[in-house]
Image (cartoon, rainbow, N blue to C red):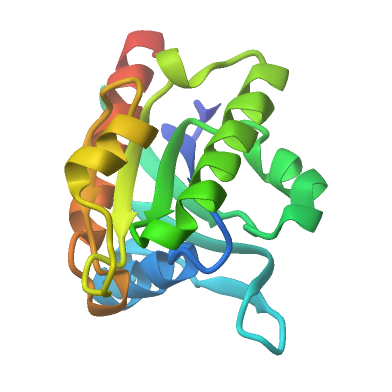
Length: 194
């Protein structure tokens, strides 16, 4: 969180985290196209030839007020590929909230767990933990065959009982609900600090 007292603005950072090809970038692209252009900045995306995020995606949103201050939400995604571990740590610096985008397919559970443990370790290295940090789970790709039931996803991934939302990011299902839930969690944390 960065507060600009002169402009009465508070800049907040929400990071979309999860395994590679889980739908993080798809979430940001959908948000970008659905949000009123007067309330958002540009979407900056860096992709490889394989359409995978190389470094990060970034989108800035302006919504409402927090104790009379104008909040600006900066949305980032992290590269899910294992070899971008250092990039993930850099992007997490100064994070105020997390959206963990899990791939609902049964054969992706190992990648989901590895990514969630990577997130927890990176937060611990920064002095936080998932137990006392605002985050939300998004169970993405619910339209594909061989997805795990939500009860099993919750049992394996939602060990802190955070909000969990079913989604099909490619069709926009659950995307804005996930964002609203994340923003609500971040605002709740910020209101205690400001």
